[in-house]
Length: 282
Image: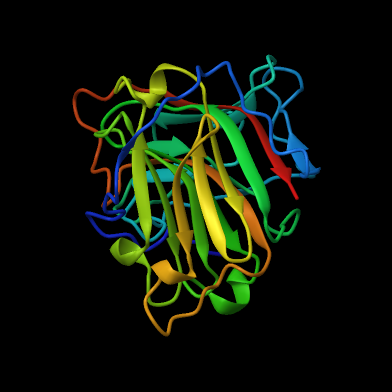
């Protein structure tokens, strides 16, 4: 099954009101509101080299470009997604051709991983949060995002998409948050961006990325500081606000594509997206 990343063109996620924030240190995680209850968690505890918990995650596998002309082949190998034994999930992008792989452009040049909770966990509304350390380098494209649980029946963008965190390697200090739906997808997706107050690259340390999702609005935060809110008023008149049903989560590290561009001679491999935890509250 093909699940696009999703049909993005160059220039996607236009910056909307970049904000300078007073961000807490990476080691300081804001407590969620007391009214919230933890409904799903993965703290990635387990022996080094073991794969992600199969009761919580499954892998998307393939090299069809994922709607964005991405260059990686996503595998289910522990070479590309494994626990490090210190409470982290590590998604590793490598410069290699995986055995038996085939990519849209010919022989695959890169491997990586994409984990999804589809069919295992989905939820309507709440707080979706992850603490991560991002990769770096031209062509890197890490993401923590969500798709409507009716993806298989409605397709994209009618199912809806919430991008909790996206970063591209040629903008190492910029965090993007966006929503997509019918009539407001691709570069038309309402969104915004922020940066750390000192302009430091997001790959320098762990940071906490989250959305607080309610029936009438979605708010994005970086290290516990809100930087963006989108409501029904932000989508085109007459279009459907498709954020009133369950969504599932995705974690991936893409290589190349129409937005970040391809790796170049400055890009070092392997690159890693290190995930400390994913927590969901209701």
